[in-house]
Image 1 (cartoon, rainbow, N blue to C red):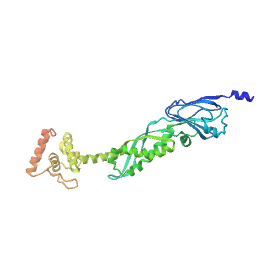
Image 2 (cartoon, rainbow, N blue to C red; image 1 turned 90 degrees about the vertical axis):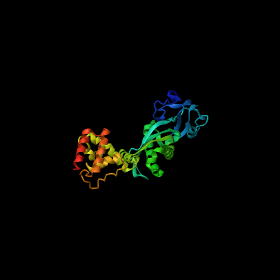
Image 3 (cartoon, rainbow, N blue to C red; image 1 turned 120 degrees about the vertical axis):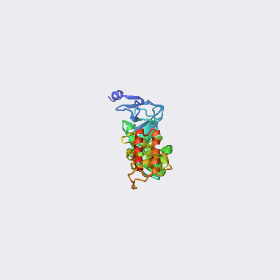
Image 4 (cartoon, one colour; image 1 turned 30 degrees about the vertical axis):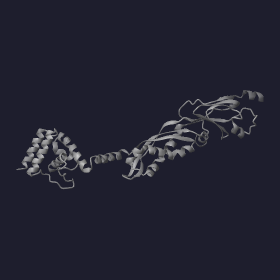
Length: 345
């Protein structure tokens, strides 16, 4: 009877893994009640490794190649089972395959802005994102620390931990660099290398190699970026005075095109100029930087038009110049001219 039971047992002659999908990192060869035949063939393909586990203990590890399973090719397992070197009966052991292919184009990013102290702007909030790539280099460590006895372990289960670990180092990295935000965009390669070096020990503790880590973007949240854009615009124009002149010149065509013509310039420019003396001064300043700028909005300004003949004539000439440029219509010019001439009495 015992002989018949032995004959009925099913033996495994070939052990291999075809790696049906892209995301499986570890896969347990199905054993059930089967036993591995002494002398069975083990095939480990390129970009794979195989590990024999005996009663929860990691035994022999195999790289790519074809193997005949004997006590000679399974030295650790032979020792754990106290086999005699001539022992040739079938045996049971868990066999795990691990994919060592690179996992490319894995995304990481800050889910929320990271607050840091910036030399130029003070406290600012930054966002960053990029990609990384990794692969398994030590399947025994990966088995003991990550995948365990699971039948199948995938990259989706692991990468949340990896992403969060990368992001956790961002704030420290930015803070330790002492580099102003303005200069960070020009040093993204250096930041990527520094970040890679910071998180490599963690990957190694999981039996992984971090092959690359790239910082693709470092940016401010939208509301802070809008403020920075305005500051950059002011600097490009040569300071606040020049920026105000530029806004005034830009607003003149808009005011002329709207109902009310230049009467609405004070509101259109948005810098507190009044419709009379302030409008004339603003136009003169826009057309000729040598003309002194208009008083600020904090200075009381008379709402009446200039009464000096020279000022009236200068204003009319400026308005006529706007007509020749197509900014004012002839009718608007005539109306404004008549209004100014009345002030001469």
